[in-house]
Length: 101
Length: 415
Image 1 (spheres, each protein chain N blue to C red):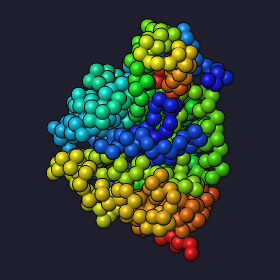
Image 2: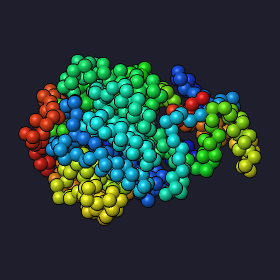
Image 3: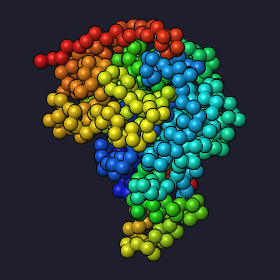
Image 4: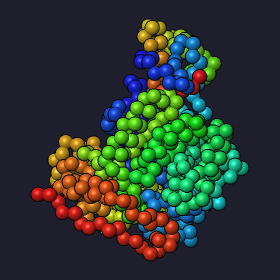
């Protein structure tokens, strides 16, 4: 993770961050296409299964660490690997303004 | 619509309202067509609903056609409601309510309700000068998801010169504050041309101050009224490049604070934009009277016949109409497109620009360096940008009635 970007207002995702999706993002199941879509201003994101699992846990209450632990129960990967993946995923979304804390 | 890789877990598609949303000044964009294929294989994803051609502003770069549609030809409330229901049912994901000025429709509230109930992500594209706070609150209540406000300039005097509307900037700033106060996401649209390109830095500061999520630095694309007014609008190559480089630096600095999308003027490009992400591939445009177009400049291709939502179902038009099938895929292409390695990446560029500049919509877009018309088009851009700007021909019903014709002499292709 590139952490050099310290622009004012940029959210840096850590283990303690309590991420949530702003109200204007819509995580919707697109039944016709049989996949999840995340609808954003003039963007459509097509999250994979892992990303959907993470996003569903982003409620503003759970910390990144708690999200990681929850996922560790369902996924056959080490907590370290999952944590790294979750932080990268959320940082990428935060940099696009799609995740707040 | 353009797909970009976000990270290992996402594909992102841009479903902008611009006819030109394949263009990007962004260096990290990868033209990965996987996400686009996955979503668009079944149905279009974006709908641009031009609710009316009425507008209080008279901007000379307007992308509406020169022949503006009259109010008595506009679809009824029930017809627009049906369009929104059909759009949701056929798998469209986002709708852009645009115009003209969409708030000129008194029934905008009902149209927003219908779009929201149909599950569409609903985006209002407005000039904002006639919008009231109670009306905005009502629209938000009915499920409006996003507001985009155009700013003609960040300087009141120049904004009035560009839009022929007094004190528009003051009013727009007021509405922008209401949008963020109501918790709606805000996009600032900055239509850039030679008469405001010097203010790009101030536009960026303003977007941050207003708490906008997104800023579109949208260099004017030369269709419709903008084509007619090109000599008043096209910036020099140097101005264009400096502005693009500046925006690239700012985008990096403001990561996570402000998303900056940039549409660059393709007269100075070497490769054409994948216009609309491909003709009839992911995007539908409906005019105020209900004509269904593959892009909002498509009517400049005179031999195409366009169906109307009053006569046929939207899905039927999408799948079966002659206009949508005219340039789908690669079958229609001539050389150099049909043997080009990029033919499924940029689809030969823009059909309307090929029509406007070369007189044949099947030709390679002259923005492509491989087009025999490219050299002449670039020379034309340099020449117009190098002379003092011509006076604006403002976009209004009077000038539309007088049917101005662009002074485009036919260009001669190179050997």
